[in-house]
Amino acid sequence: MPAIEILGLEKTYKVGFWRKRPKRALHPLHLTVEEGEIFGFLGPNGAGKTTTLKLLMGLVFPTAGSARILGREWTDPAVKAQIGFLPEQPYFYDYLTAPELLDYYGQLSGVSGADRKRRIPEVLSQVGLSDFKGVQLRKFSKGMLQRAGIAQAILHDPKLVFFDEPMSGLDPIGRREVRDLMEQLKQEGKTVFFSTHILSDAESLCDRVAIIHKGVLRSVGAVEDLTATVQGKVELVWQGPQIPAFMKALTSDCHVSGDTVRAVVNEKQQDAAIDALRRERLRLIAMTPVRTSLETYFIEKLQHIEESVAAAAGSDR
Image 1: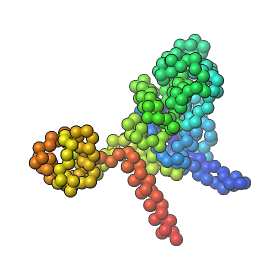
Image 2: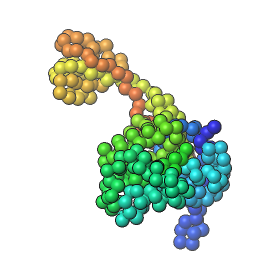
Image 3: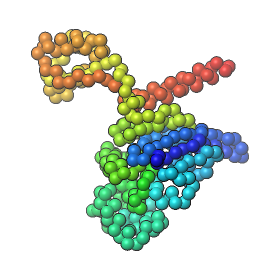
Image 4: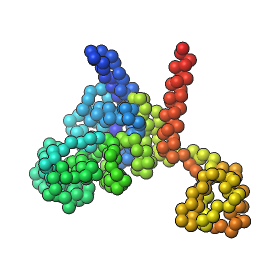
């Protein structure tokens, strides 16, 4: 059973001084997310990611379309008890401690007192905040607040968790901590649906991703399928700090790191490059085809869309 089935959801707002001009934030969206996967919802700012999440959470009403979550209509109150949500910019009362915050949200979520007493220490340990039980939230770092936000989202043990830009504003250590938490949720059998524009995190985390741009779904697929294209280049790694003169003539993309060198050459020139390394008696460590990264795929996809739109606009004149 799919965790999420989006069936033509769309959203149009009224904008302008008199609220009479329609602006479509989300075109009819059809999308399925399977149970137990980490699904990335990618797009630039203003693409429609947050609008989609708000529609699924019932925070705004759609102009048309519907959805099913965990086999039920997304408006069914019983579904809400199985969903956890972390907004992009959560606001928590600064003078609460983390246990007080979780106790408050646990009551809102219908968690019994006995279960709250048991679950709060477990969740604080899970998100790495056990040593900060007596610290007020106003003294938390951005990464710690994100972890507190994740804790409130999973306190009631939901089957499906929505995160809106969970890595936004975090330093590399904070981003790594959030990634580890999301992988842990997957290992527990939960479904994680998160929006982001940090593509390196999506590439390392997601089973599948969807790309949305200007409210239109542009692409859906497994990360390895979207990045399977080989660019016709090969990366060679060898031991030895020197770069043979012949290799310098083949490529300008050489990087020396300690006693190893990495160089990217055209696939047709790889045999000549290997022969040059043999003549210099340099030990070849690795030879790897250069594949398209998710970032490259994403940028090329959006550029192609913009070029198509510009060409269509030019032909209409």
